[in-house]
Length: 213
Image (cartoon, rainbow, N blue to C red):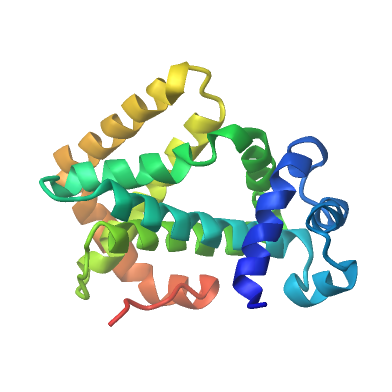
């Protein structure tokens, strides 16, 4: 069996356990037991254990978002509405596992995991822009992703504590943040200057990928 589908199944099976016990080797083992997999396979699939599982969950969620967005359709939607829908689908899909996502976020927030967290957030922003049809390769590639990474991170934290029906408050929060970005071009200029001035250092430190051809 290909490793990616197997890892997708494992991280999905970890979610109910992680909600109560956090992301750990024991939750990984419990998920393997649920799927009837040999625990001896786990070190090969996730060499660093739980943190590799969390990183794969983020990648899996990005791919699910892309499929959900393709199914929803983008025809007739402006760029802002496409981005809104992509982020909404990206989070809403996992609403039943909010506590497990909260614990994954806490694990990524540990100092030793911050470089990985930065790469994963950047990867999610990149996945959203690609899914909504952005194919830019100029400087705007960086500024778009830097801005969306900040908006996505803030929205994720808001969503984790949102008790409103169907997360309505979160989607209102997301719309306001996206409106703020569109209505403050000077902020974008500042972000472009910041990213441009420090681009090389950031790419090297966090190993952020270059624009896709």
